[in-house]
Length: 135
Image (cartoon, rainbow, N blue to C red; front, side, top):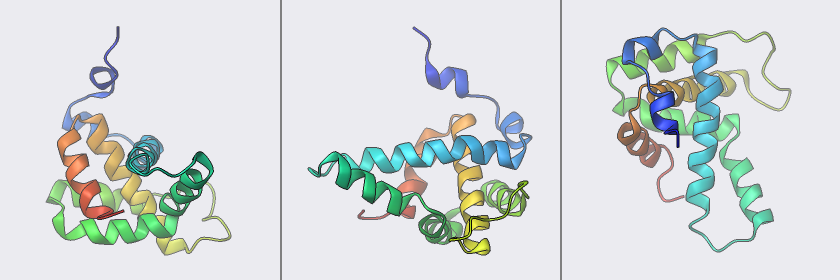
């Protein structure tokens, strides 16, 4: 059986060299999975869980999470977050999202993608707990 973590893990340098939007691509899924896993601790039905997840995985909520973790980042992590937030995709922020919030959310996703790809699972858990306390 293949170990998904060992397939994902690369050196910190390799992960840092990835395009920030590629980091955000994988980080979006990591964030979504963490949110959904946390929500499973409640006894809510699937429809309610989905609504709660959507509320926690949108650009506005991710921008707030980004602001909560920023004081706790290392210099390298802050650099990845900044590069992710400054990366320009080929489309504008969705109509219902503030462009600044969308940029911060992309930075958060890039950071979580970087941490995941470089195998820093404990750090992901630490930052996630700071980002979404008591949720």
